[in-house]
Length: 363
Length: 265
Image 1 (cartoon, rainbow over the protein chains, first blue to last red):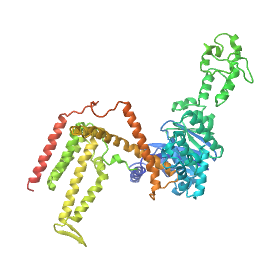
Image 2: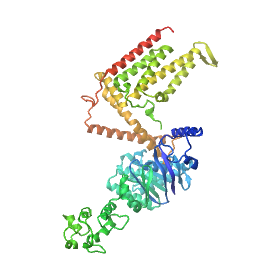
Image 3: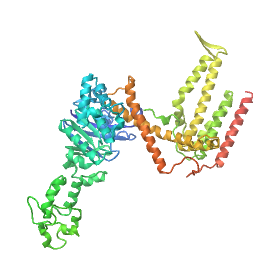
Image 4: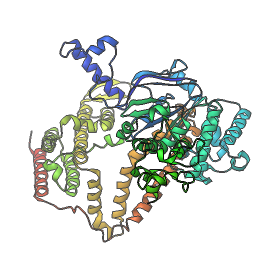
């Protein structure tokens, strides 16, 4: 399943109103009262920006989700993430541009209906959409709507509950409202998985969960991805995106701000901070240390790689230990450094106070 | 989605004398104006009435177009009432007869009269909602009911309920929209109106309403809310010269309309 956004713009302004406004403008243009904008003559349809009164939730968004890919989606609040998510399975139709699923236009209602089972959309706080008297019935809602026979539905419910690590025999007959918040979210998740989607679109799936539940949930998502399901995950947590996503789209005010691998995207920390986002913690620390003179060549760091690269420079025990005195780190940098493995061994002490980062760190 | 707030006339911010009047005075006066519209017994009196209402709108600085638009959703009431009058008034000379249906000149006349009167009523009420924020209206409602609270009418609670209901209407519309989208993306179709499909919308909506109610009551508790008794106000309502003038104008309106009623045409 390949979902391609081609020059998609979307406005929440009432399309009927916009159409009326456009018609009026067209009449006036034909009467020669106002001049024809050049872009209209070239492309035969209003180009982005030709409607100064429209407010755009998304404008000119182009990217694609390849089969089996894990795409991260980041952006500040109100940057258009949720709009994009709803465009991806045809709930909203783009004002301009097209969303293609395997080459078919989602604006076509039949295509959208046919594709809906294939693209599972999990909204924010999906547990708020539970409604059935029992967990099993709630999970069965999707497959039933697909018109599947009863035994297939039962099988799918069991499978879906198993893939979210819930036991169908244990919780299946209970009311979803009796379960804990984390379990409710799993049930809601299972409700989407029971439709056996080829692509999953997750709108902030871990918002409001405790750290343990968060970790379990991310693992669950990674598991689903390893089964070959393409995943789009909206998240504010850059660490999670850096760890899980293969590519990341960053939205800013409805436009694609950056698109690329985590290493490419997080290489521009300052620009990301300017639009209200951040880079992963380890990467942030690596950038600061680099400015202080440490030699950190990798494009993207996580905790393990950062530790591995730092340890030799700090004179700790590492595979290729360098003499600590050679680390050209000014004293001030060490305050932010994580404790290097085995900090007591410090050959750099000989270099005098201030020259060794750990010395300063202890003081 | 239908925008409910548009049906009752959305607040149109301004600083006109009408805006600055005390909401209590405005609430009473708009009721008085509707009463005056009922006092008018012929077209001449109605015209006088309309002239006054037009004057109020001019004073409030609200463009006529948005005033008309604010009552447009209720226009069907006017149309239906007028149609009933056309069809069921039997007196007068027949203009058209078709089977049991008989349209008389008196019928057309009374239909036109009632349509005009209803339009005036709606305009007078929409002037209130156009120039007064809903919070002020509920406030005025509470203060006007205050004397009744001695008789055991829970005035404060009633207006608090009204205010909260108005506050949460748009919230629930948004939530219903989200729930609908979530269920549609699970393959639900709502065009055939099957009960199970409706349950998939309403159960989550009710659950969310209860959740909101619990959170809201906790939040009110946390801020020491204990009902209306002994509660003071940040912006106490005060009658001013504006309100007195308003009352004088409406009294003048009543006098003119009564005069127009008795005046021989």
